[in-house]
Image (cartoon, rainbow, N blue to C red; front, side):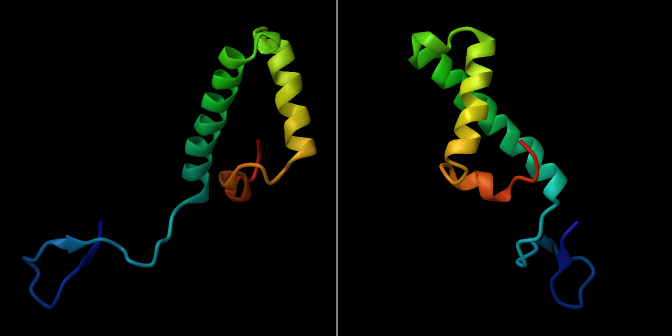
Length: 78
């Protein structure tokens, strides 16, 4: 839960303002973003309709442009 405000134990908890998060929980969310990006590319480009071609394209994209998307900086694994 959050921190209590003041000395009164009956007050509501407040949000943690330090911005801390569990990186393992964040990885699940960031992988989901990658899944949506691959799904979008498969719909956009006919040559990526098959899963194997899309997977090969995605792996090449990670190697060619590792800083293409901002959320990749926070990921520990792809």
